Image 1 (cartoon, rainbow, N blue to C red):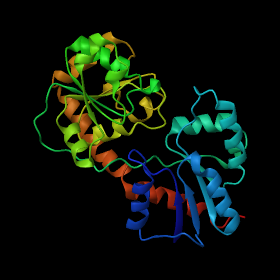
Image 2 (image 1 turned 180 degrees about the vertical axis):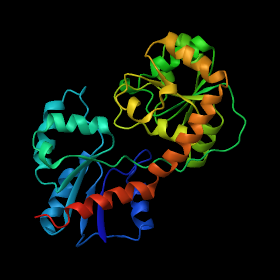
Image 3 (image 1 turned 90 degrees about the vertical axis):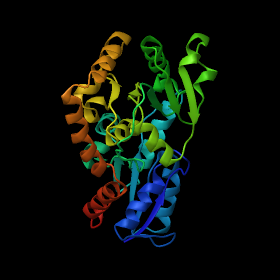
Image 4 (image 1 turned 135 degrees about the vertical axis):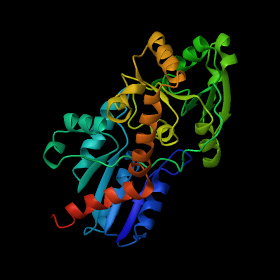
Length: 301
C-alpha cells in the first residue's frame, strides 16, 4: 500500500517510528497518489485535508494526541477540530481517556466512533544493570501539567536525587531549597535513555493531563517500577494498580517504601507488563493498527 504520513518531526515525536512500522509491514511511503493519508497530530490536519482534495480516492485518517483543556485557546481548538473531523474518513487517538473526551465533545464522532492506536515507545528493553536509589523523571519538567513540583517534593522528602531527562531544565523554576535534589541530564540518545531507565530505582509519573505517558510505558518495558498519580486520566488504563498512588506526598512516599521492599509481587507485575507493552507499543504493532483501520474504511464512500 502507498502511504503519505504527516506529523511533527522533532526529538520527542513519534511519526518517524510509525513510518518505520509501515516499512516493516512492507508498505511504501510516497509523496504522490497515496492510498492512505495518515496525520499523526492536529498541527498537520489542515495539510492532510488539502492533500486529500488533491487525491480524493485516498483515505484520510486524522489522529489526535490530546485535547489541551487548560489552554486559553481551547474553544478555538475545538472549533478547528470539529471542522477537520468532517473531512476525515476515520478519527483515531492514543488512549481511551482521550477517545472518551472526543466522543463527549464532538457530537459527529458518536456515529463513526474513535479508534485507539496508541503511539510507539522508544526502542528500550530490560537489561540486568545495577540500580541506584535515584528517581527518574522523563519529559517536559517545566510544563505545569507534568507537575514536576510533586516529583521534586517527593525526592526531597525521601532524600533522593531525581535525574531529569528532557528538553527543559527544572532548576530554573524550582525553589532554591529543592535544587540540590535535581540532576538535569538534558536530552539524551535512545541508548542512554535505555540505560537511565535500567539503572534507576523508580520512574516518577506525576502528570495530571497526559494523552499517553510514554515514560510510563517505557519504564515498564525496562522492568523499572513507576509511581503514578491516580488522578492522571490514563493511569487506570495503562498503569498496574500496584504502582498507582494517591496524589499526596504521604501516599507517594509509602509507595516508594513498598517498591524498596522488594516484595515478590513487584517482579511479577514488571515481568508481565514488560512483555505485554514491548509488543503492544512497538512500531510494527502501532502501524498495523492504523492499517487495520484503513482496511475497515477503504470501501466506504
